[in-house]
Image (cartoon, rainbow, N blue to C red):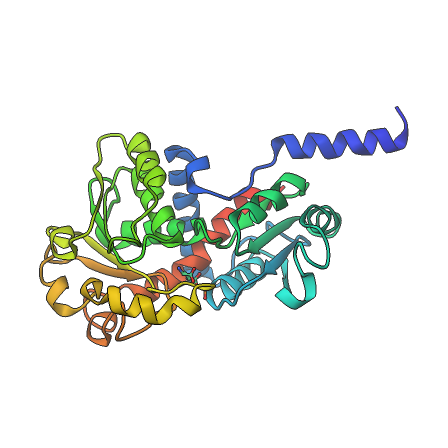
Length: 322
Ligand code: CP
Ligand code: NVA
């Protein structure tokens, strides 16, 4: 075997063992629970000692962003630092994913420099293509289809506040978007009941509902249009922006359709006593959620935001540690 062939076979070996974090659906309930336990352990370690074991010492995460971000960018960057590694922010203008250079070549080149790639993209196919050609783990930091890192942090937050995920009723109000997709799949995987209420024209894709129903072992998955019916007995009320990144030109049209789905005190009063209110943020206060609720006693919005850090540290350790 030549030296070049030997190097190639080592690369192939690494690739065969390698995992990506692209979709909650790719992970078994046991694996997801393992990630949640790891996240809780890393959080506790950080809170008690002010540091984590440096298991990613010398490792670098390349972060490719096609859209703006506060939480995703900062939590990944800080998470890598806590674990002894480094994160590299690559802005839309720098990379020109698929424009300046093909996605396959971006994946191949980055894989020679960094030990993991996190990407936030418009088109879900682009994250799949990055993963296809990368020889290092790829993490989905949001696409038009889903937002798996958000969902992992969210179920961690549900577990912390309600003691368990299994059997809880999680209700999503509003647009059947990327955040809703991952939350539905995570709920189905972990045994929570999931109901989404959206206006006609903005309902969650039927194939995702069917996928959730197929995954769910004993929990109910439902898509309806009535927000009041949806929140009856809810343990969790979740909402997100009515207009996602990339849909800005539809904002006025959407603002006419979505007001009945606003998470306000009247709607929260219909849910289970002690229910928690969640939002992935950024919030458009006065649209999908009122200040009264976002800053009120049911809100766990900022615990959720914090848990992006802890949940993603678990993903980073799982995928990137030696
Ligand atoms: N929730 C979330 O992903 O926030 P950012 O868009 O700020 O990263
Ligand atoms: N649905 C939102 C989520 C932002 C974190 C968007 O895609 O813009």
